Image (cartoon, rainbow, N blue to C red; front, side, top):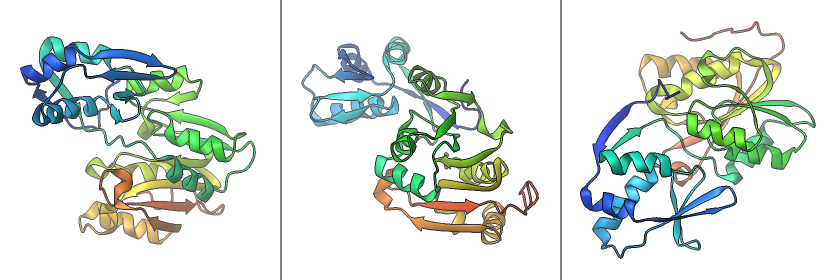
Length: 264
């Protein structure tokens, strides 16, 4: 399914960029797809082409001399070249750097064999960090994007859902990097708390917006956060493309009723 919570816009791709995209050379390297630009481009044309490739989750790799993709972009690229348009979905997906993921796993107090939910799994970066720290964790994943979910499935991860905000399961640990658009990180944190078992631990990336904005949603969230067993630590702004973020940890006290102080 497409992400129903993500705003989209359609942009027209210039003809000179379409020509570059249509002439790229593609190779497969284990689980990665490499796309190499074969033409000599001036700076302006390269910048325009790179923006399109980044929208398809491609990252320039100097060593490979190519853009590297976790998910093969060629089916989508073929549609772009044919139609001359790109639909940009602002779904808030930012891969979690390994060092940040390991810190999050440490904050979650993982134990051998414990069940862990990663509800915004993307391409699996945070899952890999969790399993690196505690390989015997029983990790379940949810991912709303079709392409990323297919990649997770092909890598053998246990997919138990598509849309986290409609999920009703219970878990001992939830570790997540949710979308930030339109205050979605608040929605995901509150729902994740409801999905914790008593005594469970939630660790989440959040944008700084909910901690300083004065709209009702942010004010209510701060009251909720202050009333729970919660702590947080700021991340460097460079971690997620210049967005001010922090890690939060919330422990669900065993004596609190399910859903207490749930915000509507």
